[in-house]
Image (cartoon, rainbow, N blue to C red; front, side):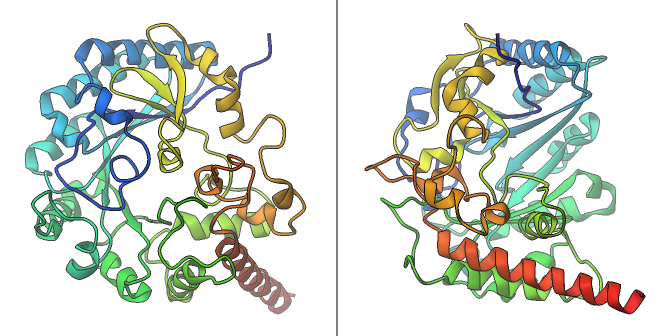
Length: 382
C-alpha cells in the first residue's frame, strides 16, 4: 500500500451557522448549500470521535505537533461549554502524543472576558475577521438585520489587545474589496496592533468572477501592491503579512512558507457531522465541490489521505496544475493560485486562476523588489 503523507492541520466546523450575514461568505452566499444538511453544532460524542482519530493519526505517524483550527459559521455560537469540551478532549487525547496548537477563527462580535479566560486555560489563540474601518467593514460584514457589526468587533479586539491577553491574539483576516482604499484599510487594521494580517482575495471562479474582474487588468494586484509598498518600506516591521512573506520566500529560496499564494492546501476539514472535506474555499466552485464521501465514523485519516481528490488538493497526483501554468515562468512564485479560483464548469479545475493576471503582476513585482534589494545589500557589504 502506498505510503501516506500525514495531515498536520485540521479545520473543524464546530458550528454551521453565523450571527452575521456577510455577503462575500463562501459558506452561505456562494455555490454550496451542504451546511443546511449538517448539525448546527458538533455533538459531544462526535468531538470525542474526532479527538480519537486525530490522536490515532498523530501516533501512527509520530507527529511532533498538530494544529487544530475551530471554525464555522461563527464557532463561538457553539457556546463555552461545547467549545471547552472539544478543546479538553483534543488536549487529553493528544497529551503525550503530539503538541497540540488549538486556535479559533471568529468574527469577534461575541468575544468577552469569559471567552478569554477559557482561551487562557487551554493556551488557545484567536483570529478576527475585519475588513477595515466602519465604512469598509460594513460593505459586507453586517448582521442579519442589516446593522453594522463594527462596534461589536472593536470591543472584542479591545479585549485581545490588553497586555494580559496579547498571547491569545493571532491576528486579523481581511477580504480585499476594490471599493476600499488599500492603504487606508492597512492603516486601520494596523491600528488594532495585530501580530499578523492575512489578506484574502474574494473567493471566485471563472463562472462567477470577482468584482471588477478583467482577464487582462490587474486591480487586485494593484490593491495589494499598494499595501505591500506601505508595509515593506516601513522603518520597522509593524506586523507580519504571510501573503507577501510567502512570495518573498519563494523569490529568494524557492520554498514557500504556507499555502496562502500557491496551489497546495495541506489541511483537511472535518464538518459538524464528522464528514471529511477538502479545503472549504472550494465551496465557491459548486455545490458539493469540497465533499469526499468519507467520514470519521467509517474511515481513518490515512484513508482520507489516499483519496484521489485529497491527493490532488494537496498538490500531488497527475497534472495538479493546468498546462498553461506548468509552462508559465512565474508558476514557482504563484503556485497556480488557489484551486477553487481555477474552476470553470466546462473543464473543472484545469485552468489558470481567475486571478492569473493579478498573481503574475503581484508576484513578479515583489520578486523584483526584494531580489534587487538583496543584491544591493550584498553589494554594499562587499
